[in-house]
Amino acid sequence: MTSEKVPLVLDKDAWHPSVLPGQIVLVSTVDSDGEPNVAPKSWITMAAFAGPILAFGCNKEHTTYRNVLATGEFVVNIPGEPLADRAWEMARHHGLQRLEKSGLTLKPAAKVAAPMVEECRAHLECVLDSVKEFGDEVLIFGRIVAGSIDASCLEGGPPEQYFALRPIFFLEEGYYGSLDTAKRAGAPWPTEQAHFVVAIGRHDDVVRETVEHHVEYLQTLRRRGSLWMAGPSSTQETAAANLRLGDLSGMYVLRASSLKAAEAVVQQDPLVAAGAPVSVRAWTRTF
Ligand SMILES: Cc1cc2nc3c(=O)[nH]c(=O)nc-3n(C[C@H](O)[C@H](O)[C@H](O)COP(=O)(O)O)c2cc1C
Image (cartoon, rainbow, N blue to C red; front, side, top):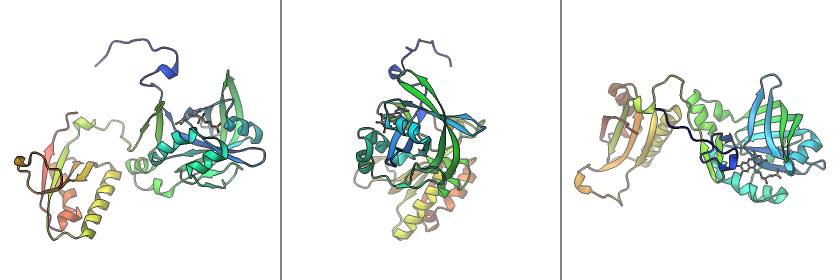
């Protein structure tokens, strides 16, 4: 489907939606006295394999830029989605007060004096390569000299790994997006994939431990990308009870290659294994 093209004004702040979302990172630096600073940035990109070199855009008035010029070092910390709100909150304060209010933990980096932000999931330690000026702003090029990542982000294949990393992207002021899975190029679109609605009924003999195992099992499926959504039904709010859905305790939607494959996944659900009644129904996702 094509659409009529309309001109975009040449002012990024006026783009709604922004056509160039940027990954949100926390750049940590120290000044020449060793005082640390951490600031959110989102104009960031890899610039060259050889080096490797990355680059980020920064206002010349920012402490980050001053510190990078003074020490020639910085760390690019990669926050996961749980830190998204904090990134915006941080920009409202400055210096040590910002650090204190953020509640973030700084720890020494391996090769540079700038600290790492422990709560972030990956860290790229950089030494200053060069700076390109554009009016009030600069593009800072850094050579990555060391890197580290949470071991939990390395488990499983790409869907699990990106689910664990869950990077966030600046869309426009006050809005971010997150990436929580990896789609293999060439794989069917979500609307072309086979989905199965799994409805689980109440079962009096189920103990809390079984429910916990059930939740863990669903989390594993979610990380693998084969679970789309899941949750318990609310006993308090049951409108349209006359639909006779039965005593539903919860529901989830699976992606699977066939009904048989979906049933095999459902049979391993600890709740089902404990005897909870279940129905698995092929479902077509239209939107
Ligand atoms: C999500 C987010 C992304 C941001 N991205 C950038 C950026 O790419 N470049 C920039 O100069 N400022 C960016 N800012 C604004 C700075 O973080 C903000 O001006 C901050 O006060 C600068 O801190 P500093 O003086 O300690 O470096 C961003 C702010 C937020 C909340």
